[in-house]
Each structure stands twice: as structure tokens, then as C-alpha cells.
Amino acid sequence: MQSRLPVAQLKIGMFVSDLDRPWIDTPFLIQGFLIEDDEQIRQLQRHCAHVTIDRQRSTSEHQEVPAPPRPVQREQSSSDPRVVIHEKAGPARANGSGRGTSIRTTAGASGRGARNDAQADGVIIATNDAEFRPTESGRFVLTPRPRAEDAPLPLVPEAKRGSGGGWAKGLMGALRTLMKGEHSSEPEERYEDAAHAPPRKAQPEQPPPRPSFLPETVQLTYYADSVTTEEELAPATDAYHRTNEVLHRIAEDIRIGRTLALKEVEEVISDMVDSMVRNPDALMWVMRLREHDSSLYGHGLYAAVYLVALGRHLGFPKDYLSRLGTIGMLLDIGKIKLPRELLEKKGSLSNAEYDTIKTHVQLGLDSLKETPNLHPEILEGIAQHHERENGSGYPKGLKDTEISIFGRMAAIADSFAALTNQRPYAEAVSAYDALRSLSGWGGEYFHGPMVEQFIQAVGVFPVGSLVELSSGEIAVVISHNKTRRLKPKVLVVTGPDKTPSTHPASLDLLYAPAHGSQPAVHIRRGLASGAYGLDASEFYVS
Image 1 (cartoon, rainbow, N blue to C red):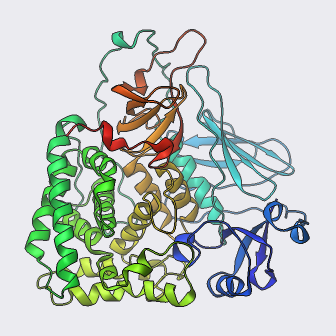
Image 2 (image 1 turned 90 degrees about the vertical axis):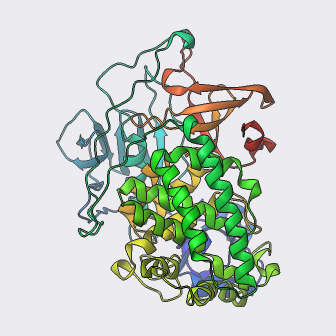
Image 3 (image 1 turned 180 degrees about the vertical axis):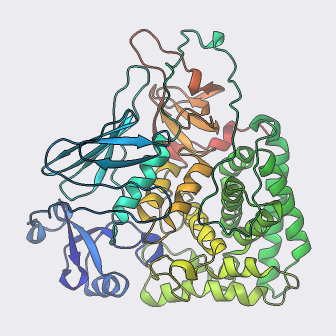
């Protein structure tokens, strides 16, 4: 059982399962640990106000668990659509609006898109496909609802819960993202023989509504894919390799004190932006499949790609996309000035070591100050990529609107890139789990509506990520279906026994065949990079 304690009450022998801030922003870079000495307690007291204790994993003298508090009513407040939860004893119904992308639960209301059944000890929020149920600790678990015409989604583990209503923002983000575009009044067509399935019909794309957090001074551009993922693979691969090579040269130049070769950076970023404007899935796929090529500082390439993907999704003009790509490429450039042994240290950092790591932001800005014609928004994004909405970030402890839009975007892309790639001090998590974590942190640490836009930009199961299918096979996500995001096109790379396939085959899950009473093949869960010892790049054709 889990219980939340003030850090002043911590004792040796307690197992810390969660913090009141993202793990990535603390010296405790291994998520979940047993308190073994007073120094760990002092570190927790310095960085956190409350932590979550797993009583079952604590030593015997700390295994008594207090009764969990009764959930209380929490309500979102924002100009954007939000989930509003009203807890009441007795049954209730709720209207669903916006194709199931937001839900407001009210007593006595009814609607087709979503359903809410409130009970005396908690709330159940449901859509046609899944429902959130509260656990004893007050957290919510997204549980799939079986559908006759579709296979169920897997159980989604509990979202992280921070102070200040962060759990509700996680609930909102997961609900709106997972259900967006998944409801249709038309019955889904089934094909017993996949060979006879018609080609996927191009869906007419409409410009999305302008997010309220975007400055009115920015004239937005609507981007539609002009080529398929397969057609863009070759140009995307070239752009990836050129950008990676330049990143290595930049690292060496910064190491020996040379001025940044801005023109060279601008050229490769321009190629990358052009590729992603044509089709963003291709470069994200190449990036994920070639991740083993990256150096210690290759993190910047991932951040750059995700920043451009988010900017494209929001509709920023191409010159803004180039600035975003440059921010991502350079945001961690200051780490080149830090001791390599510190960057590669395994396990938690001491307070002094963590303080040293935090200096990489200023070191990067110092390295770039002599670069002529570097746009001020680029420097601003680099300076703020570790700031957090509640003021707990660094180096200046900015909060809310004190953080620029590029700073907010950089914080999200940087954290997602860090979570999904192997680090010396932490295992990579699946892209799906990383997005779920970001959703849970939205509002308290990251700008909530922007996190939602990021999830829509990269997809629930991002291109290039490994997934396990209901058949037991492992596949790589190739491209997304814009209207049914849980049914992407995948490359099946193993058999049901996880043995690599000699001849991987693509499968469009939108038209995956059903066999008798067996449901169509669907995604069972997302996997971290390297799961089952698989190197996805082995299945990539240059």
C-alpha cells in the first residue's frame, strides 16, 4: 500500500516509490529506492516536501499503513477544455463533447459520448472505449472497456500524482489523448483476408483550432503531409546523418573554445525542418531506429526533432521551426564543459554533484554568447528548458507565464527525449509510459495544454517505438492513422515467441483482419527501446 508523507517524517527503512516532483529533476535518478542512511533523508528533505512510501516494500517496522484519505472534489480551471469531476453519492451521467475529447460530469445529465457512474467511495469516468477508476490511494487507473467491434486496450498503469491537483491534469491528458478520434457512429469494416482490404483512404484534414496559449502575433501555418512516410525515408535519413555529424563537430568546437559555426547549424536544421514539414513521421522513425549511433551529447538531436514536431503540429511558420530545432540541438551543449565521469555516473547524485549538473545551462549560454546573429528566442529557450511551472526548476526558479513559450516547449521535449533514451543512471522507458508520465506532470511542472498538444504531435505510440501486439509479436510503429491513433501502421519484426523475423512484414492495424471469434490484432502495450534484446535498427533498410 502507498501512503504520502511529509519529508520530515521519513525514516531509514522506508521505500520511496514516488516524489512530489519529477524524478528527472532530482538527484534520485533511479525511480524507487529504499532509504538506507540519513544522507538520503537529507537529500529528500532538500528537494521535496512530500514523498510517497510503499509500505509493502519497506522494512517490517514501517509496514503499517494508515487508512487512505477519502477522495475530495477537484476541479480544473483554464480557458482550454478540461475534465471537471464532481463526486456525488448515487448514479450520475455525463455529456461527452468534441468527439469524446473532453468530458464534464454532472448529476442527472446523459449523453452518448461518455458515461460517469459516481459511487459513495469514488468516481468512475468512462467513454465507449475505456474508463478511469479510482484506487484506494485516490489515483485513477484507465481500464479498457471491451468492445464488440474492436479489441480492448491494455490496462494503463496509474498516472503520477503531484500536489495541487496534478492527478486530475494527468487524467485529463490521458483521457483526451487516448479517446481523440476513436469514436465513430459508423461500424468498423472487417476483412477476413487482409489481402482484400482496400487501401487506406486519405482522410480530409482540417486545420485544428488555435490553442489559446499561442501568441496572437504568430501567424499560424497549416501543414498537411505532402508525401508518405516511405517516400520521405531517404531524405529523412540524409537529414539525420548530416545533423548528427554537425552535432559531433559542435561538441568538439565547444570543447576547445571555438565559436559556434552557426551557418552550418542553420543549414542542417533547415534540411531537418523541410523533411518534417513534408512528413514528420519519417525522421522520427529514422531517429528512433538509429539511436545507438548517438554520442553522449546526441540527446540534443532527439530534443530538436521533438521540438520541431511539436512546433509543426501547433502551426508555427518555418522560421520558428528552425529556431525550435536549434534550441533542441544546443540546449545541453553546456554539458560538454562538465566532467565526463559525472555525466556517466550510475546511481543517485549527491547534492553537490546535482548542483554541478545544473550549471550546464549557464555554461551553455556562456559558450554561445559570442555567436553572432543567434536569435534571442533561441537563447531564451535554452536558458529556460529546466524551468518548471510551479517554480521548482532551475536556474532562476521561473514559474507560470514567466517562462516563455519556447522555454515551455523545450522543457517538454527535453524531458521526453531523456525519459525514452538510455541514460547512465536510469533505464529507458517506453514512449507510451513517458507520455503518460508527462500527462501526470502537466499543470504542476509542465504547461498542461501544451503537454496535450505534444502527445497529439508525436502520437500515443510514437513512430519508431516498439510495441507488443495482441498476437504476441513485436512490431515497430511506422506511421500513424490520423483519425484512429491507436491503430497505426506497424512493421512486425518478431514471431509470437519473440524470435526475430527473417522477413519483417508491415501491417496496417486499421485493416487488421479478425479471425472467427478472435478479435483483430491490436497493440497490447508499448515497450522500451531494447526490449527482448531487440535492436530495431537491424530491421531498417538504408
